[in-house]
Amino acid sequence: MRSMLICSAALLAFALPLHADGFTVPPPMMWTAVPCADWNCVMTELTVANGDRDVIAMPTTCRGFPWVVLKKVPVGIVDPGEGMWTVNHYTSVVEALQSFILISNDRSPLMLTTTGGTLIVASLTHPPKPRVVRH
Image 1 (cartoon, one colour):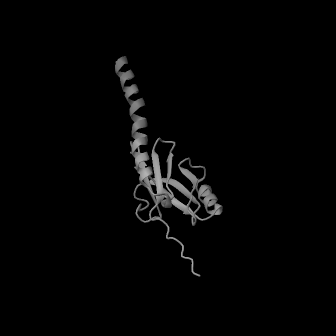
Image 2 (cartoon, one colour):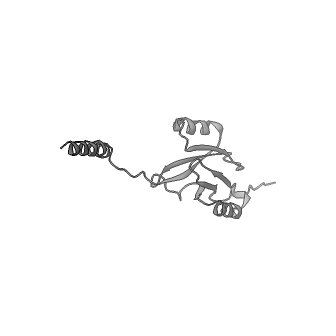
Image 3 (cartoon, rainbow, N blue to C red):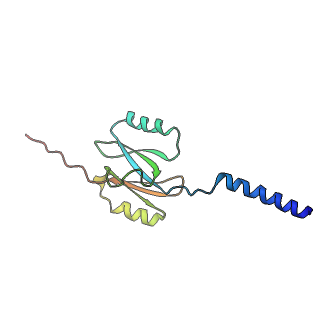
């Protein structure tokens, strides 16, 4: 009787927290890019993030948008095909480096490693059009 009481108490101790919390699978995440024309835009994005470690501001070589803010968001929130910047995710350094090398310099490529170990290669979707100077 005593062993049955101990077993049932142990079962309740383990089963109640599992039932109360439930098992939820976190949504798959992706990185997106927000181009910023000035530092005020960057500070706004960082302020809205409220210290989130998955928001990164990076300088670029792009003339129109010298800053880009990279954000980690759940998949499905943003359509990755609609932005000025393309962000690709890699788990292997070799794959990320090969992708980075193939991007032309006029597309302002960036490569970095995030806190989760994901390698990110970001670049302009289309190279900027050359300026036409008329005389």
